[in-house]
Length: 356
Image (cartoon, rainbow, N blue to C red; front, side, top):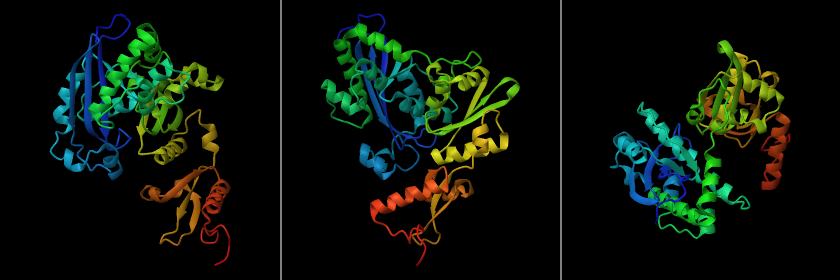
């Protein structure tokens, strides 16, 4: 491999892949790290290690990655490899597929150690879309197949990191370094933020579900919102092409943003509703007037009968037994009836018809 000729291409790249115990960086942990370091167009180092996540790996994750509890039992904890990981990534463009996933997990691990970690991030999903906009699928398997890249250790950290390095070399040849540099610049363009917000906000926002709050002058609470992807939702408020006049006014007023991460969508919804009711943000008129959401709950003890109740009435300990979020009891009943017809379930047992 020759050195990069186009000066617009980065000289230092770190192709990174992680395996984890789940999909939420706030609650799940890293089980494996793989890094392929490229300098001046040449691969100069490959490195990987298993990581003891200090918790059990769910069975479905073990089946997917092949990484078992026994394999990580004697592996180093992240605290023991943090300085090594930081050194492997230092000064390089952080390159990963669905990069915010891997980046958010590393940042979360460093935060647990009360340490800072930041890097410029390139997502190869976004890069692939820029290079081949006519293609519909840009997951790693689809991109590998499209470009003839093979992997002997798929869904293991170093194997997938090697794939990314191979894809980079493919793209340097076709469509070529100039086109690759143009696509790279477009993907790396910083998101537009209002003048009153710090530039590092886009880097700090987590990828997972939760609730966010916008504050204006003198700390006035302007707006409370929720999302299953906090970073994307918050930044969407400030993207000019997506804003209506109301959102534009709100964006101009924002001076500070904070957030609360939750385990999932239901937790985000409940937290949002509680904050709107208790703190009465200026721009949440619609939600303040709404009746709230409803869910389906099985009888306790189990009888097969489902009740439709306001989700705000459910204790957090029982949320695992709640099914669906609906704007009204009528919507919930309609959804349940459709499921019953499709699965040929008893409408009386489900509580949709009267009688024994």
